[in-house]
Image (cartoon, rainbow, N blue to C red; front, side):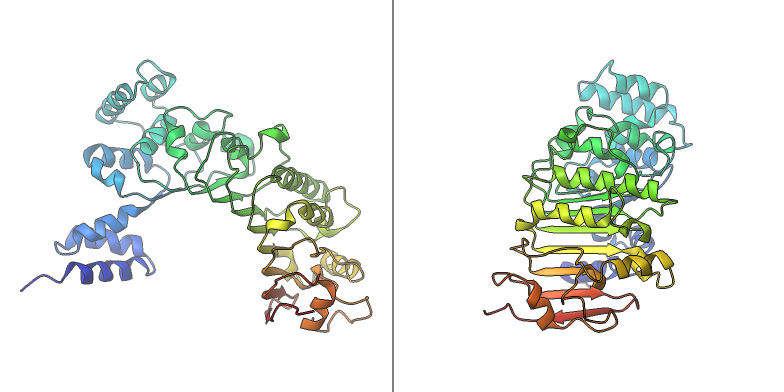
Length: 388
């Protein structure tokens, strides 16, 4: 029987890759199908996810099949703690040889690999992925002393990223990191366009000038501060961090900005750092933003007394004024973020398109606005730009 055309094989593999448990299914195709094995292998290694203890095994695979490294486009690292996997003598010898080939003989990296230091393994993996464009490092525990145990944090959690990893990172177009790894942004990312900072929990201890200096080309920025806080003081620290980050955005042409927030008590306008101050500060970078998304996890806590009080507090005053968002075309915010009338409208009344236009400047080009209400339902309003 004639084999299926390669185009059909590619469609089959693509369909498998989109299904639930696709990694397991692709691995099965690689192992059992002669016809689909090659294409399935390329799809399997295009998006690699490393779990605890996986790094040494993956490095061994790259040593044995170096061509697979050119297949990887996206690397997700799910290592939160130091791996318990010790390097066997053969892998250690190959790693030392690779370091010598990179001109790192006698370096700190070689010393670490001789001591079973896995940060070197993490670095060697990156140097063998020449086509890598997306990196997602899920190292962001709340406690810094826990984060520091991760080999990936040890590799990137300092002000200087060791060579020759820096050139690898300079090719990235998408980067996701934990809040504890913000110093990584001190190196140059000339091609970086998408940046996600997860689990922002503490104020920045670095000078403001050290924030985002290497990410001047970022267009799509997602700041995630949804760590559940224990008190107002903790929330204040988180908003302090967000304010520092937003201040550092000046000069960066952000076109899509998404901010995830937690804790209804942070909406109290009397706090030093509150959602009000945070959104007011957005006005300084508002002119280039085309899509603004503000997602408050606590907005769904209908029974929360503090949330209800905060919602009432902002009924008379809008949380965000959009007159300066001159490029805005899409806005997704909780419904109480906007007060579209003089304050006489009851809180349970729907926001009408004409009310939105009353609060917008004539030159705005908003084409879609979504309001997330306290009933956990989203109402989407599509309307044409204001003509007069």
